[in-house]
Image 1 (cartoon, rainbow, N blue to C red):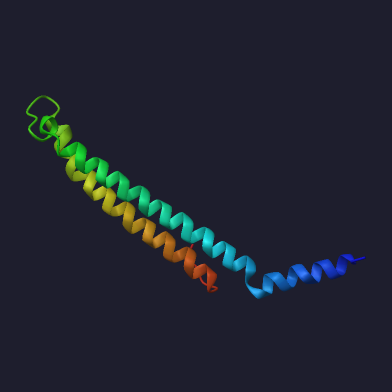
Image 2 (image 1 turned 90 degrees about the horizontal axis):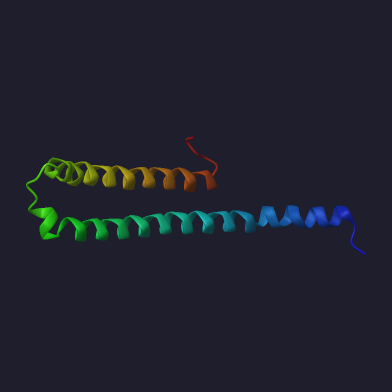
Amino acid sequence: MQKLSDHHVSNKFEEQSGYDAEMAMMKTVRIIGSSMIGIAVLVVVLNEVFALDTIANSSGAFSGVIDSLKTTGGAALGLLVIGLLVLGANRIMSFFGGGGF
């Protein structure tokens, strides 16, 4: 029969051996990777939508909205990627004992 204290020691050993840190790191890699794939899919979809002749050659009342979406949307995607890289770097640095936030 295993004592409670022996079970506590084995859990402590697993934490010290890096098992939990490895699982947390894999979770972080999965989140960052899936966000990058999501951004890539969004860029491809927006590129195809803006390449349509109806949208590319618009001259109606909403043509200014489409033009501002093209410029502001590109800048927003750039900021989204930079923000994701900063958050990912912060999370990875927390594995080494640091972390900014």
